[in-house]
Length: 246
Length: 213
Image 1 (tube, rainbow over the protein chains, first blue to last red):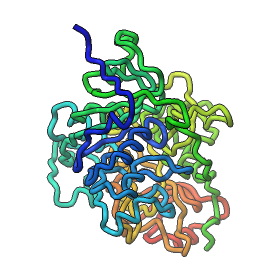
Image 2 (cartoon, one colour; image 1 turned 180 degrees about the vertical axis):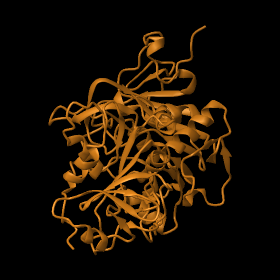
Image 3 (tube, one colour; image 1 turned 30 degrees about the vertical axis):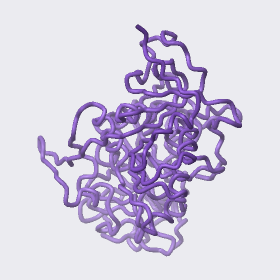
């Protein structure tokens, strides 16, 4: 008996079955670890009424990359769940803002650590947890809190996903993944929160057994499809953003 | 009064960075707080933590030296110092939530003398940018804020009570502005330092609540 081979030949094939109304999570923090190729394929596939879970609403990169802002602009998105629904600097305007302010897209704003932990909890069989984050803020209004050992905590629920799109440096055919540097970010928790996880991979996909078991960041049991990213221009890689004064 | 009177942006960051003690784990927010990493703090060794899971990052990578898969919280291509580690997002925030960050440095729109501060949503906006700020504000051992003392049209940013939605309540340890370094003391700010050439009277005129010498 051998481990199932999860290698898929194209991005289009990898996202073909995603239905309207799906909840999809995306790894990525700034450029690193963002599954640009899968996002572009989903935009071409055409699924609508989607709920998207990611750190930001995208669209901040210059030149633009196909991040989730592309799906918003194409009218595919019902709701986003993000740690940013506006730019870090109030003077910057994101593509998302126009659609949000027009009421065409809903948004749930979640503190970044709470977002990561809600995903981890979904992947860990934990339905909810208490956190000190956001206590006393607008986000906690009307919600359940509890005092534990003298400190007030806010109840947060797990955030399960139908699909996760992740990006890794290296993979084997069973879907064991290894990331490089800050490429890791949300990818492991997105993968564990999802019913179906699809990984785009920088390097040639290795035969099962080629990765040392101690060197695997996301085990293949959390991963269902792997696609090799071809060289540019067909495949999208991180590219240097234009420098801005910060 | 000119908003640029007193310390420059780098000098505001320097004043905060001089509070860092040897061995501290420090998280620097995007923008002005990033300048703290330029400050010479002598022989003291500080470990910089970035919310995306990079622990122990060093200076910005030189031209041509960038690893495009290695960024800090501001998306800048940084380097790693010896002993650095990379973790995923849930572990990065486990480090924050469990109280292992000795100090976080953030920008803000407003700081109140009761220790509240606001930095995620501007008046009239539908969306906001929280990022890791609420986790850091609620859980870091010390919350340092750097901000201009007044808005561009001269209104105080150091106030009795925040008018904007708060990031966390009662957490601010110190606030550095172009006019000096201030400590929330309940119903007033206490002056810890004044920038050169700035008088207590000038600070009081530019502040939205009492200021104690």
